[in-house]
Structures are given as C-alpha cells and as structure tokens.
Image (tube, rainbow, N blue to C red; front, side, top):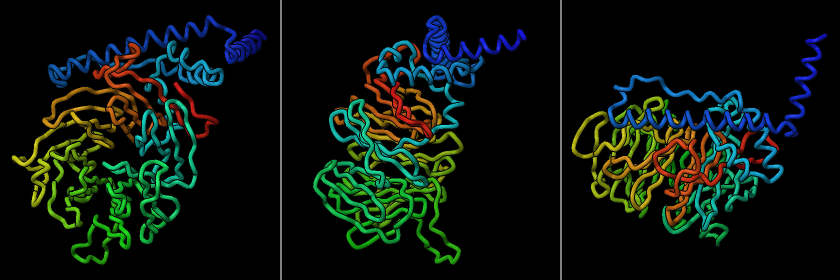
Length: 437
C-alpha cells in the first residue's frame, strides 16, 4: 500500500514538473547542468592544451566525461516549453547548449543538415536529408525559418558570380542570384532520378558540376559527360557506382578536381581534359578544395575517422602526378588529424569540418588558427561575405550560427577560436516543430 502511494506521488511530481510548478527542482537541474558543464569544458580544454603542447602520447590523465546525460529528456522538455512561450533567450542564459548529454536522443532523431549557402545579409538556404532521402529545403533569415518548395532535390551555388542552381524532379535550373532571373535550364537524361550529392554551377551558370554516387558529371546545354569514374580498360564488369564521391571547381573555373574511394584525386582543365592526379596520403580520397585566390589546392584522404590533408601549388597543376603514400616536394602536409567532410576558404585560411564534430581553421602552411567543437559529423558550412558569420550543419540534426571572434558566450564552449554561438536550430525527425536553442 505504501509503495503504491509512493508511485502515485512520484507520478504526480512528474506531472507537476511538466508544467514548471516545482521551481526549486528546475533550479537544481540548472545548477547541475551548469556546474557539470563548466567542469567538463574546463577539463577538455586542459587536456587539449596539454596534448597540443606536449604531444598526445604524453597525456596520462583520464579522458573527461560529461555526466549530464540523465538530464537530457528534462532539458529538451524545458527547451520545448521555452520555445512555446517565446522565452528562448532566457532559457539559453540558464542552460547553455551541449552535445554529449543529448547523444541518446540524437541517435534516435538525428538527420543531416547540409548544402548551406549564403544569400545575403544574415540569410542562408539549406537542406535537410541526404542524397538517398527525400529532402526538404529551408530559408533561414536571421532567426526565422521558412520551409521551401518540397519538390527541391538539391541546391548549389557558384564560387563566384552569385549563381544558384536548383534541381527539381529531372531538371536543373541556374539563376542569377537567389530568386533571380533564369540563366539556363538543363533537362536531365542519364542523371534523371539519381540522388545528387552536390551541385556546383560554373560562374556563368552555363555548366554544372554534378556529384553523385553513380558518377561525377559535367552537364552543359546538350551533354552530360561523366568524368569520374572512367572505363579506361573497357571492362565488361565496370560500374559507375562510387563511394566517398567528392569534387570541386577552382574559383576561376579553370580547373575541375574529382575523387572517390577507388581513385586518386583527378585534375581536369576547363575543357574536361585530364591534366594531373594527386594520390591519397591516407587511405581514401575524401575531400578537395581550392584556396580563395586559387593559389593552392588542398586534398584530404581518410582512414576511418582520421585523415591527412595536403596542399599543392595551384599554379603547378598541369601534368602534376603525386604518387599515393609517397613523400616528395610537390606537396605540403597541412593536417594529419581530420577526416574532412565539408569546408570553405576565407581570405586568410581554410575552415574545415570533420568526422568528430570539430570545425578547424588553418592557413596555407598548416599553421593551426583555431578549432571549435559542435558534435557529430559536420555536414554543411557557409560563411557571410564579410567573413564574420559562420553557419554549420551536422548529422546531429543541428544548425549552428556563430559570430566569429566575438568572444565565448558561456563557460561551456569547447574551442579555442573565441567564437560566439548566436543560436542553434534543432531539426529532428518526428518532431512537430524546429526548436531554437
């Protein structure tokens, strides 16, 4: 009888807590969340500082552990309540966001936030979902989110010239600016119905680099030319299916670079003639990118969650031939940690997102500028034209907006870059609405 009374009392307490009637308990949750969050962040930063100063092999301490996972469900409940009552800023002050305590929920509800592209002012466009899924496109303007046409399959943006490409059903259209005038429409044939990983329109909008797991193509007015893979030996068992497909254009569109798990990074000129190759220095080619002024090309190859990024002279790409796993003077090792998924070039350095949930900045000589931890594999990134605002998406189902160099907002921030998170959006599966934190 007494046990039944306790069970009833416990259920009533939980019900009251749902409506925020027990302020003392919420205060206790807040105190634990902040105390443990600050302890964890402090220990992580101390460990990282030691490892980078003295070498990770000399670290003998325990790896820091975030012990707040038991608070996850209640924190998300309180976050939803704050969103419904328009008290997001107050909640953010009381409960600075974190990733690791929410992992059990993320594993159930996460989805990829990718293809982030800057439009103007504080406005970007992005997609939710991978090439293998039904995607949904959104417009983010400051903190307001607008759901776009559900028929949009993929969006791309040129490196220069502010040209956008939008794929709907079996057609890709290029536009001069977001919602601008139409430049060209491309009816798809070989690419019809294929999930598109990435689109990069050329600066004039008259050609498009299309990346898929069934081949990488250059499409133009009357042609869909697959440039990777190529059946050089006329093998009857040959297939165009590839993994880890990745590609980039130089900013001036003079060079095209493509790669996949079973190839080197292959370099083509603007006429789609193969002119060079860069072999992986780790196991598999995974990412490539030009510096903003095209004077350097970086390529990343991966092994499990780690990787190696090298830089080559952008003026020496014609006839370049770098062998896999061979040290020589034709490249510079920039990083030996990251499996890179996304990245961009600023006027001063690269910002790359990796498999571990970090975004890291380093210059063309490999000097580390800063790093910032968000959690889960980074799947999308965009930066404002003035290079002060950064948006980052990840496989956690979160989109983060950072003001670079503004200063840490709280003592929970895991990073050396002195960046201020303005907010993060949580876009989880099977939820009624997007949450802001």
